[in-house]
Length: 165
Image (cartoon, rainbow, N blue to C red; front, side):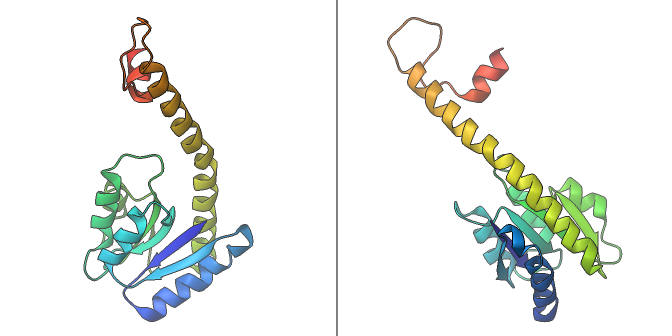
């Protein structure tokens, strides 16, 4: 699993990467970015990081906006973002924007390591659900495409079936 460390300050980014590297025993690979636009592209890529530590004040596109944009997809496979806030920046605003967690600077290294590890565990627990959902979607599509008059129409989705019940 990859973890994205997105911070505009090289020394802070390196420190966060070292902290995340301490979770590497669980197979965590650190990917770094110093720009919000690049961070967003990495997070939205099909093979992109599912876990991220994102600074609120990133150049190009701030961390709060990244949380909003990633959250628009309402996808269980969306990355889990830990937003790093400063001083008067509201942790509640960060969480409302879609961050999975927020920390305030100065960041305690051991606390950040624990939060990254907790995010890793959550993402890993959700991964089997993504596989099951995709499999069920494929089965429903195939089921809906047959010619039987069973009340289902082609293109049924898991969400539409669950809502109908």
